[in-house]
Image (cartoon, rainbow, N blue to C red; front, side, top):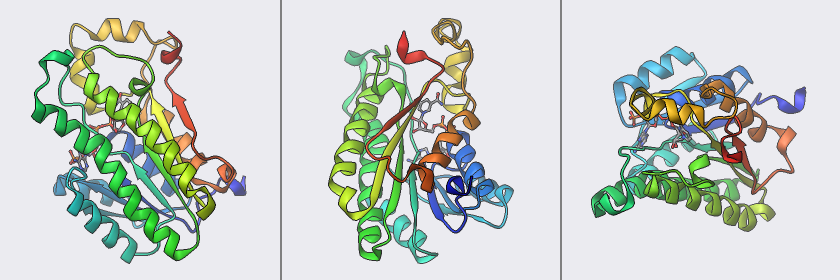
Length: 249
Ligand SMILES: NC(=O)c1ccc[n+]([C@@H]2O[C@H](COP(=O)([O-])OP(=O)(O)OC[C@H]3O[C@@H](n4cnc5c(N)ncnc54)[C@H](OP(=O)(O)O)[C@@H]3O)[C@@H](O)[C@H]2O)c1
């Protein structure tokens, strides 16, 4: 089991103040890692960091802003070289048919869900190359990047883009020891989808999940621990689907 340990590793998790990111942060700490979590809202971020104990600190960042992303990686790195970056911060602010989406709405989702992960990865990887100790990047994408979901056109395109980005970065960075993988969850019980599942669509969406229930953040966190650990040292460019069978429908 030693190969599954994260003892001695340092990880940065964007969107770590709640939901899936918080679940990953907790699991990483349980596996022995020191963790930096990042999010926009300072109060909830510091509360989350405090609840995770002495091996966690919170740094404010909006991943939609490239300057903020560069500053985050610099500040996190100053606390100790990063072994793991989890690009988890993501938004799904509307459910609209493609023809109803404005340019501003398109840009908002792309900037956070795709551009944020792109530049955070680049900033972290450059430092990982220079340190010469390899590294691991995990992108939290979505099953929406694999199967088409109605009223999620921009979100789905961003997540599909994240899948291809994962593979290209894995290919380009394999020779420098930086592994890049993605986790594609199906529906997970978090604030992101609360309203949707409480709406008239909720029952139909739940009925579409072969396992008959939404995931919890813990259902997703185990794969993140594995990907970050030495047990996954030969895994790169993979998309790990955790969806209760949703993509099979
Ligand atoms: N829940 C699902 O069913 C589901 C399914 C598939 C994939 N996912 C993906 O999983 C990831 C996490 O989702 P979740 O369900 O855990 O969402 P969530 O509960 O809404 O949490 C989102 C986290 O990201 C942070 N965040 C949002 N925008 C940010 C930004 N611009 N910069 C920095 N941090 C930001 C939030 O904090 P602040 O608001 O304070 O910034 C929060 O910590 C997302 O990438 C999402 O697309 C979720």
